[in-house]
Length: 364
Ligand SMILES: *Cc1c(COP(=O)(O)O)cnc(C)c1O
Image (cartoon, rainbow, N blue to C red; front, side):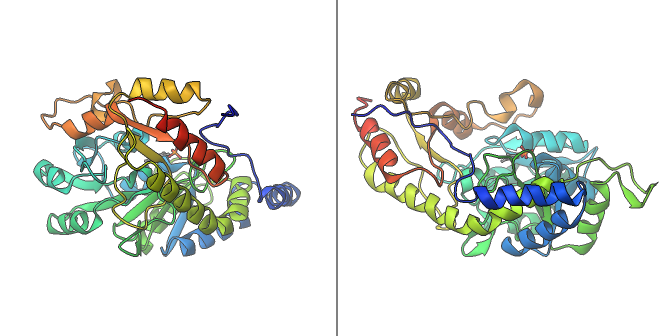
């Protein structure tokens, strides 16, 4: 067996390298670096690709979530229900808004927000629900949007891992009042630095966020609200424009690699969370291993990198501890078993096969 190292990710430019280079050069030559034509064009192109009316380019996905909360008037005194299993930045955005995050358990199959747990956590102070389409798999949007409507709550979708994902054929992000995307370099659509977008079909909300991301100005040097400084810059927008046309192909490639894993890992010592919707975009390919440490050690010996997403439920982390009595046993169990295998559009079938073969050699 060969022992060529298989890294978890390879995000160096590949087929897009020359268009990215010329896009960056175009911006440098233009002399316009903040809120210019590239951002405007990217906002248009990304909103079309995502089936949403408006996309507002911001500094990162965390700010996109924060600006959606702020733009919807959610803050101090409000509770926002979200999942116990996510990147910590989902919770950071809620805390920055002044609202209190209320973490609830996940559905054991989807690994996303459990609607029954959401329902049980609703109080008179609840203002919003933030589901996360974790790993690229859509949350149960039918039940969650019904719940939000019935209790008059805002639904804000965290789409930071779900570019181009669909739920029962309809684009994620279109079910709620607004949604957030991240273009962190490792995301399915990644910039070469930080970037994000807050998207919505609500004209008023889009306008408020457009102002809030730029200091809350209503016109030059006139600050209507104390907003923040969170603007997508021209170079990142140009890079994203160069990559966006390739995103549909990359998404197909991710799905093909995931299918290969699913077919060939069948009956091995690990469990694969089910695909609950064919609109899954496989930002990550997590598996469950009851003896995770030895499983990872074994793959490491075979020169195969793995990463744990995520090792600790959010409410167990010092920054997010509260006196809430809500429990999240499924998230706790998943955090002990989950481990992501390499999956990215540049990964070859041969590499996948070597990973599968190495997993087959794990005695469990
Ligand atoms: C990446 C990510 C974020 C934060 O995005 P940044 O651009 O890094 O701020 C938020 N939520 C989820 C689920 C993410 O994966």
